[in-house]
Image: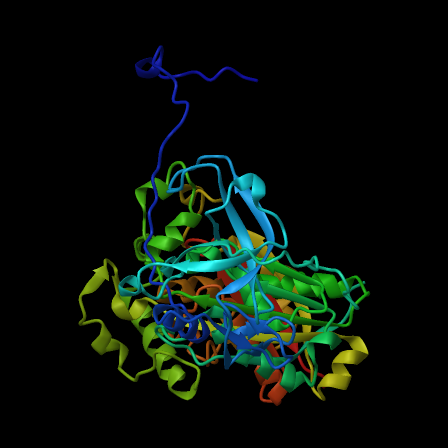
Length: 174
Length: 353
């Protein structure tokens, strides 16, 4: 490689090894019609799914049934109790975490729903968390309900016997 | 050996300043349903699906994945996505059909330009070390290009105003246009510039929109439409990222793409140019060799509606629709990407005689 010849004013100066170029952009988020219906339900202490034309109930619905590409519109109230279908124990600290490690994030298939939601699993040692565990929602105080999933603080074991979880892909017929 | 591929259906949503009640997938779904219905196809009859959009518009990582739900991708489909205008998604689909394994493709794109500060959002595509940290907004960069044109004596502010006035007047006949009016160019020149030398009328509106087309190859195209809009040539070329390395008063990438696509191989009935800022239309006309063409941007172009990631495919769709309708025989469509016309795609569409 050819040596770069610097102008005299730059000879002997410390080399630039990195630059910081902070970027921040603010967006106005449009939840959409279906998510607005879901979040309105949450603000009332209800968990609302939407039934797709094919029969599946999605919680929450983004507005489209991925099987048919058609809108979901029939609202269905689902249970506050469900089954843990997968989980992850978080052992790594990261910026903006807001949680003491280790803690558990889980996918919870609420009774009456065909799509699991992600939430925290608490009131259970991380080593005792297991797929198939029955869990229930623990809500914030009713006076603090708002159009956000933070209205549910976390899910905790409810003591019911475990259920068998059908893993994704099992029984697929295409 | 190039395989004959045609556009057989086009759909677009009416462009709006801000779609604030529907999310992206809810906004897109009717367009997908319309374009498939026009082609008489269901999703399971479509060989390949390709989309164009960018996470920078929604401010969400992998936002296109949830939008894919609107396609109905189950059982699993052959699918791809480009972080570009839908015109480049069409290019990928065209290449895919060239392989000869599949006969049909769905191409779609959507863009909500309104949720973020779009002119600053677009600065994130610039050189991350030397240019992006300065946050040059899209209007200022277009103004630099306009100033270069004026300084080179290649155009006047009156020329810019003529483009703006004609585009918005043409848009009066486009039901999907967002911005349409009829004001004489001379009157526009009385306005003050917003970023000298650009006046407000020289700039595109901020637009939320979506567009989709169906491609079909060979005999399949003739089964799906009696007058397919055949892609006779398609090519895209890019120029350096550094603005200082380019002559902003010309578009060599458009010239090259136009030559490769065969723009001058026949008479041109209609031209749709993706020129978000009025001075850019003048540059593109010259680059494409259609400087005196009487029917440029009958839709109003990007000055009538500029959904980012969509306005390019919309140009192709506008020309294709005229061929499908039988109101044009051969037309040229152009799409652009990047600052100051950095990357350009040219597509020549033609009907059967």
